[in-house]
Image 1 (tube, rainbow, N blue to C red):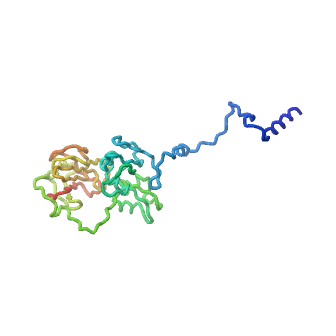
Image 2: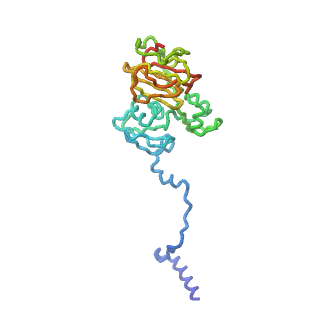
Amino acid sequence: MHANAGVISFISNLFSDEVSAEEIDTPSQNMALLQAPLSPMGAIEEKVDELVIVDDAALVSEVVMPGEGKTSSDDQISIYVVRSGDTLPAIAKMFGVTVNTIRWANDINGNTIKVGQTLVILPIDGVQHVVKKGDTLQSIAKQHKGDLEEIMQYNNLAKDAKLVVGDIVTVPDGEIAATPTPTKKPSSGGSKSPSYAGYYMRPIVGGIKSQGIHGKNGVDLVSHHGANILASAAGEVIIARSAGYNGGYGLYVVVKHSNGTQTLYAHMSSVNVSVGQKVSQGDVVGKMGNTGKSTGTHLHFEIRGAKNPF
């Protein structure tokens, strides 16, 4: 009876309005407490305040200081807050992408950016396509001049993947076509382009011309695979792409010259120069190949800002 009385007394005290929390025995320190299983999303949930929402997508908040360079992983979108003195070309160089890649991702016309502006930076050159009704991987590749295999590989999609309206598909090395204007399109290397007689040398030794002026004032010159490609004039290398589809150019080099023009050498099998390197006329800038949008071994050679004499 004494034991039963103690139990009754404990229960009575437990439900009494006068009992305090301190009067209820706490579990022994040696007793394991039950815990809810840790959610696999726990780590993400704890970091919610560090995420930034851009176009309804959660991006890792990353403020990169000028000169620090890209710190995100190779497949991760970054954001960059514009600081005093920044320019689009400088930011593009910092992240290893083209100026157009930044323009297209942020709907920027021209080169105007403002201090404090937040820029979305894709991890590779290209564009992000928001899926619309009727889109397929094939139609997206065609629209943005991308490579279907690269799109499938980068987005981990099968060729017959069913796309959902609103999904975002990254197109490596893709382009956004310029809005057509009613102005008359100037002819490539037309009469209004200056002619610098004797300034440019033929960029290959021997070989033949397989196609005349096309594209952006370019010609196609054919020789054997691995043939030397020579700098047509002295200048500074401003682009040297040793990998990728690059909008169809494949491996290519662009050299800036003192007369304000540029020469472009495309479809290379290898690139022998790097950005910022000074080259003399006749220096080997790469080897002839068949990379990018090419139907056979040849050099696609462009002169931008002057007549192409070849």
